[in-house]
Image 1: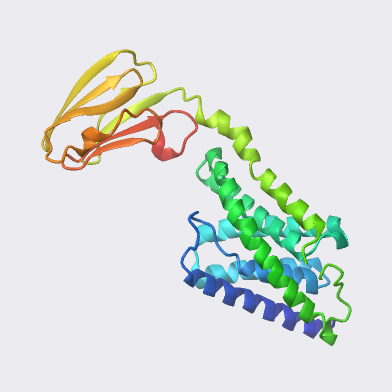
Image 2: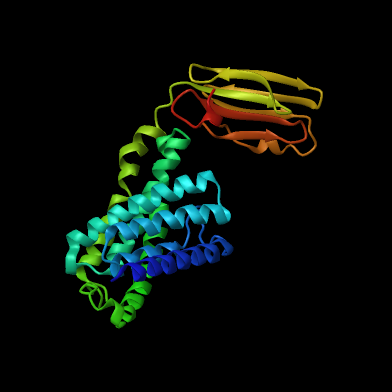
Length: 178
Length: 126
């Protein structure tokens, strides 16, 4: 994977994440639980975890996506919630992926990413309102989150399986994909 | 497509999400030390009644330019028992005593809100 290819790939992934974020913000909240979202932008994070060699590049994609999506249609509070959720879920996914190795598939990684995204948001939420009681909302939110996380995992599974056929990605490790 | 460890991870995460419920749920929902009822008329504070140390029955008349309400305080709970507004919806609310509960009499612009001095969000602080 040479330098130009890496830059272009990161650019494409960030722009795809932004497109998904914009589409998602047009969909009215589909759940009873306020704050629950589909988390489509997380699809790109999961895919890039599998197709990029360097973990730092994945982190770069997350940060760029957060900053640009705030510029497109967000404010400081969405940035704070989003950043806490995204960074916590990034570390959780790396942890699960490293520990699980080939025992765990994209679905498990994606579901744990969704869970920790919710956890991060609720931690920031309870710091902002100075009330730990916000955490009691976790079961409802994480049920919805794990549900969408499973579907994001299934989708990523298909995408990674097809991407790995391209010769550019000959060296990626697709033991996790079935 | 699903592997065994995926299922285990998901079940584990679901269990994990109930931990705050177990740890804080019992502690938060029970012991409120300082509870008070704040009566506001037209958004302006009218009277604050300390409820947590209150014992016995007491009735308070609230006369405002909009009308007349009678409030009954029974131990640590509060209710509107009489009002001369035309819809009388406020009288249908039962006794309230938990922080966050409210009784509203819209025609008289009257609101009774239970607040607490404990760890609650700012809008619920006495």
